[in-house]
Length: 529
Ligand code: FAD
Ligand code: SIN
Image (tube, rainbow, N blue to C red; front, side, top):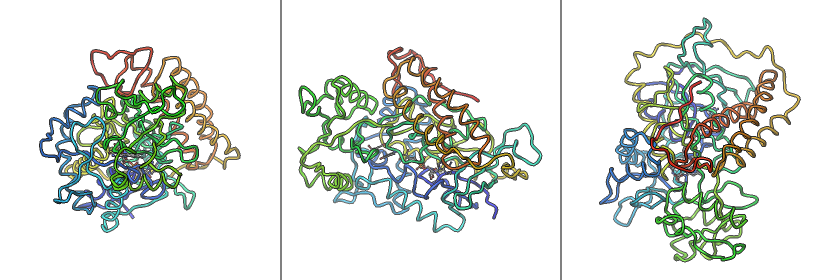
């Protein structure tokens, strides 16, 4: 079966694009695990949009640029913010059961950095409801085929044509089929990368196991510019639990009055410390709250801090956070009566494949949308609940551009099959597992919330060594999903460290003690292969 368009990724960005395109075209969507396996299904807090009486686009734009420390591209911020109410309306039409007030208006919650109540949500499990609605719409559309368990390895470019040329048009991707164990070529007139972020480059992350930056690495290898990779967002409040390592406690808990306090191991247990760091207290932008917690944990030698909402009515807490309440009760923590132990963890990849307002990358035929991309919306730090929004707006923008320019997109040439003639099965799987662990450990220790040039250089040195080992391994052995991801993790780690070393200032999420001040001009870090 031939498809017109290939979409790699089945989260909010990929499925939004698929549903828009399927009005006219045959679309193939690949996911590397289950169709609902991306970050979208895990989103808790909600989606930001100007819907409250008295709120304005100007205010949402100003909050986004304030969180982004001036690095945002203003035209992108305006484009996304102005399209937000329409994106929410479209989700309502798709059947997303957003919480409503008694009068039928959407219930709006509040999160850090927002100067208004602006977040539409479905309890504390918004992402799951969104993913379900998008999947339902995609499944009902005969023009959309969704294939799970297909791990895209590399983009197909003119170099892979039967008659290779020096041009760099993208014609689809090679993907490893987990069921058959073979690599297949999927050719298309246009390709959209919607592969999500790269959180798993770090030891502790709120993101799912598959967030290994595959799209960023594939785009880089194919020749795309990658920008602002030093801006890795750490969420301030990930549950601290030795068994459950990546459970997020939504920012909406602070939005509804939760306080951050020192634990019993501090000299002044129960002390609420955020007022000493920022006048917005617990609702300061994430970079500020995460750095404050990191500072207190390191200063006092704590394992974690407390997030306490037990001063609010138990019924209110249970009603607003039913999933978090249930999860914590299962772990022996009653959040209506006691504080929750929390630590910061990697949460969101602000940088990525550089795109324009139509979702176009540098390469003809290749688009990107969602967390894989760097659209200019987030700048040096993403404002809470702006990222699902970006997926909807850019998923649709990329689809619209493809549809509007369809006649100018040529048919793909004949493509060479994947060549396995010079590789054998691996007999040293331990190398892959060891290197996976090693990267995530040193990225956490050396390229975390507070950085120094010396630690970044140490990380770079390790990346150089690991890269040699993994390249050799990749050249000799048949690919496996873990090896494909490991190769991408190294590529992405290298991009993060190179970008961090290039930034000689502290801005937004990038804080280095060697350059603690803000430079006069805000300049993107753009890496070109
Ligand atoms: P994803 O939803 O991550 O989907 C990626 C897709 O790409 C998946 O289908 C995956 O299988 C596929 N894929 C990846 N690599 C390959 C490959 N090599 N081959 C084939 N397929 C591949 N944002 C908000 O705005 N509001 C929130 O409340 C919120 N809460 C969050 C809570 C958590 C715990 C997390 C982790 C994130 C949260 N975010 C939130 C961020 C937001 O969820 C993500 O930025 C967003 O869902 C990303 O969507 P996406 O479509 O870009 O990618
Ligand atoms: C959260 O619910 O705290 C996550 C919101 C986001 O990542 O935007």
